[in-house]
Length: 364
Image (cartoon, rainbow, N blue to C red; front, side, top):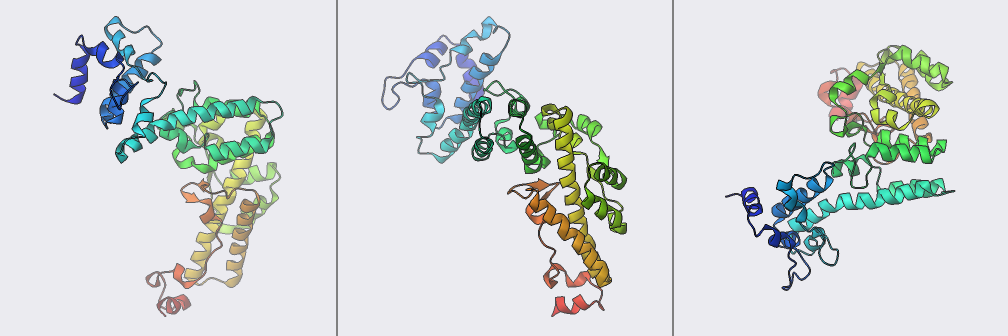
């Protein structure tokens, strides 16, 4: 008989209530119930089952069927208010401690979200204080919520990620803060966060929403928003920028559309699209510079491409888009803004024509 079957069988026995509701009086388990002893002794599969059963039936909105009413009798806190994770952290077994740490993540998140909302709702909260708390607590980092499996469903705090984001942007509507927060979320972990199915959006929904902007769209955007640098790059970039394209941030980030509307959404979208277009140009300029070197192009041609690339990279740095862990598509921002390297170790000798000057350098 497996462990699942054993628990199911025990539930049918008269001893079930005694098993899960009787507090231990024996050392070293004074004040503990069955689930605490299971966690302490490394029976984490059993502890998980008991906790899952309890939390499941407690979260049910409808009245629990009489057949399952005894499942609510499982005691989660010992007589001193300690949770099973407290016992597991004292275990000599590393796998038990790891189990406790993993289970503590939602509890830490709950505590930090309560603190965040308290700060947001305080009068005259300094923006730097709010930003610092978000950075240090990581309470709005996608990976934190991903680990808790509650990105778009209500956590134990009674909030979902999108609700917390909406409250932050509405209760603290300072434009600089909203821009900073949305930029941080967009570039920090976009590849595994915005629009992906595990967080409440189906792939079909994402496909319907996603809009890809081509060169003409980006040139129109740059002209209408007064981004003369983009207008200049896109106008004189030549064939190597002919196929440039960029996803519309408002359609990549479906969560962003939930948090913002009206002027704030328009403003943040423009800021993110400007930065995203700079990233695309920076990456394409590096590709084109390498192509020029490989085919032995004119120095003037290479200089122009490198100048455009360097200027876009400097604009990204000046705009604050190069924070640690920021990404664009699958590349880190640190990599995107790195100066183009013309040293020979960039090139494999077998990728160069025999007569190319760099062939001899690469083989030297």
